[in-house]
Length: 341
Ligand code: ADE
Ligand code: ZN
Image (cartoon, rainbow, N blue to C red; front, top):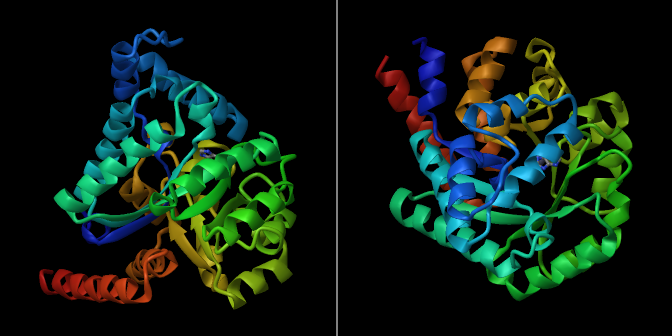
């Protein structure tokens, strides 16, 4: 194994763009379907894997929402999240900021509280057992109407102690951030920190809207911001974090060939970019696999990997003290690693 691969595997990591429902592995999908007496349109695990071939974001979302139907009880949500966190412990992840999609569940008759209690129990256990710290970010499904987002926000307000932020995901084209300006304003007034998916498939103007209309603190994806030089200058000037997801971009045909991926251009432009997995079960890799894939495709050097690794802690919603402590640990890791060579 080469030194850079060992470095990537061992380095302390933070993941900031991860949909917990996107960690549902085919094996767990089958076993939860059986546990809950749910009929899946797949004969076996191999058939599920074969369905994970996507021509676009919408192709993926159709399979993703169908897959969620096996998640019914708090125990299901606990098992899902704890399996992810156990994998993250093995990948030396120290901090996670996790998206969940309550409307994907309440629309099927699974209550908001059922979803949240399972997730919160898993996060608390991961803190106890693995020392992994976390934040939960509740996403609004942008293909649904504004009123439904308002109803979801009402649920979040009842559970404010457990939900740190709000996000925006699902079908991007035709659903601009400005559709949710009023819900975001209300959410920010209620103390939630705002992020949004923008510029994944949608145009750079959607990134501008996320910044101006939604007042987000971070852009999820944002690849297409590169098409607008003024916007790039603004993102660099304000050091707005961007959560880039290489294997997702490849599998959703946003960037089918990772040797052409914009990550190095983004780094060179001075953007505050991070590497994340998005929906690892569906896209063929967790955070370490994303780092390894983009490192080999772009031939990133150790300096660039270190920068990406540190950017994640800097871009997180940890307190300044927590960030400094995580960055100090990162520097100590580098010293120990270099000493062992
Ligand atoms: N929901 C889950 N993954 C998503 C993605 N990559 N883009 C938009 N919505 C999503
Ligand atoms: Zn995403």
